[in-house]
Image 1 (cartoon, helix red, strand yellow):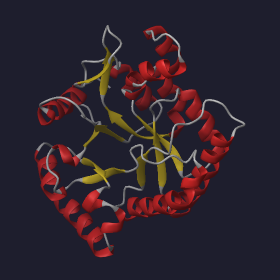
Image 2 (tube, helix red, strand yellow; image 1 turned 90 degrees about the horizontal axis):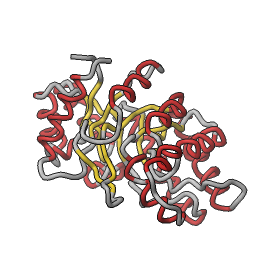
Image 3 (cartoon, one colour; image 1 turned 90 degrees about the vertical axis):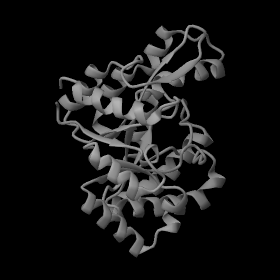
Length: 281
């Protein structure tokens, strides 16, 4: 068994964080990737509640790998959203610090492929303001890979140039998104085109200096062009190569198992833990 640090979304086990932490501990899973919504939203957790969560986690022997917030509802490319979104994002940064993970995984809008336009300028300015604040308190916003090629993310990271900005690398998203992107761009989808622009392993090599957290999720595209999330190890992600790229590059963070589809999510997560532990790294 290798020494990979594995995390899971607590909601797979229970909507109650304490119950989820206890289940994770029973399975020897050291991390929980907390979705900061509902009762775990920053506005719902006062200082005492945050201390209570930390005590429960320490007693259970589990920690938060990162908080997950902004799943696509915010678009910093739209300057009119800044006034509301940036203060809200700063609260998420503080929550991450208070829960001692200091990492927030989320989305800030679809990064434009081209520069020199209002949407590009807006996402750069909004992300920089938010992440400079994060850097000042020791927090980092980890943008999740998705509909943008890794080279586009790299341009944003280099332009914003903030210690409070990094990447949550989701290799499966770089398989799931290309059919939709190709349709939007009115170009034929092919696996070759997707590999040229979205290859997960090449993307990991390109973004390696900024990767602060990663999702462990798998996917493929069916013959009819439909993308499909599948159990870990059954898709197109080359997991031995992907893990080796990260480990050789010095990554020692969490691999957070995410299972959004399927009829047996708990079983799939348990099998995913076993799969990750079986890798020779």
